[in-house]
Length: 114
Ligand SMILES: [Zn+2]
Image (cartoon, rainbow, N blue to C red; front, side, top):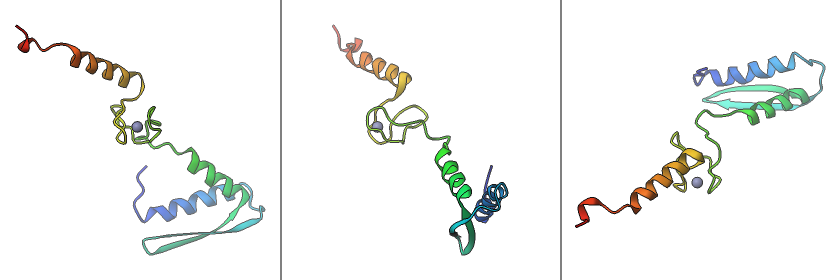
């Protein structure tokens, strides 16, 4: 799903309206005001809407997020399981690459022998 900049407010409004429809009699907790590029959306937030918003934001999984780094706990692990923060190679694949690299470095170079 691609959301253009003018669609951000519409997406938030649509989400709030969709959840609010399940329990329209729920009491207001207050207003949520979202301002974006000069446009503003003001929405009344009820308990069910607040819970749904928090759960939706918490459940979002970015496709670029490969989980935390085994070494530093950072979340900038690239597609090759390489941590962009500390350089650690993560997971079983990363471990295999690191072991192979270490073995390669340990082997004497044939050109230097003799
Ligand atoms: Zn790391």
